Image 1: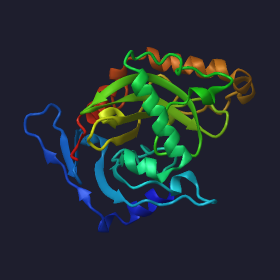
Image 2: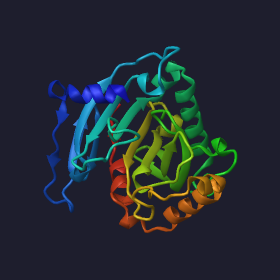
Image 3: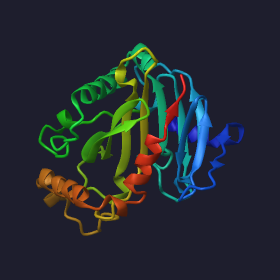
Image 4: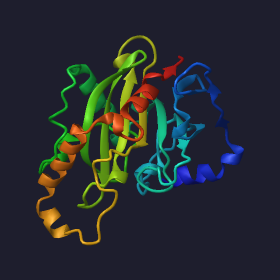
Length: 274
């Protein structure tokens, strides 16, 4: 996540997009317009830093967060301390990629996400993601697409639904990433939307939409207690993780912070010219 930290240190010379305030919305929403992309959002989600990134090729020693195809990124610089992703330097973000740029980039991680999303969209519509909302001994086969790539394993999926956007379709779900066997805490859960305009067909250029934002469910512990029994947890890892997923799926999403409705509304307000 080094590039996010560096770019934020350079924010004084970068473009901060200031919100255009709607007069009759409840709550009042901010509207962002940048490089042919616009969306509306609750300003409590943070100030927005919009930037255009040129392609950075992968090298043999690159970490997955150090290379990417060309894209436009909106980073949410939160007012709430601690609301970052994966590590303290990685801010919540909305990334817009041209499907053609991902295809031309020809990197396995990006291509796999694109093809996985394409398969789900073309086969989907019923909204039944119960097969993915579980942890098994071979959990890698249950991964849902996620861009940008995360340098850790996707350890759970919950509250997954198809969610249409303007001229497109995608999948919204809650997830968490980890590099070890650890219990889920409420600061590890991330809302993400992975979708595409034009559903990979038509004569207009398609775009891949990737939005991730931390979310508190209120049904998981805030932190791991000092007397937590890691041995007991690791011996029953699959059962314990599935219990946590069941709690999240059974919870009222209107009590989440932010609510699923607020984040879904942001996604569904995205408009891309071109």
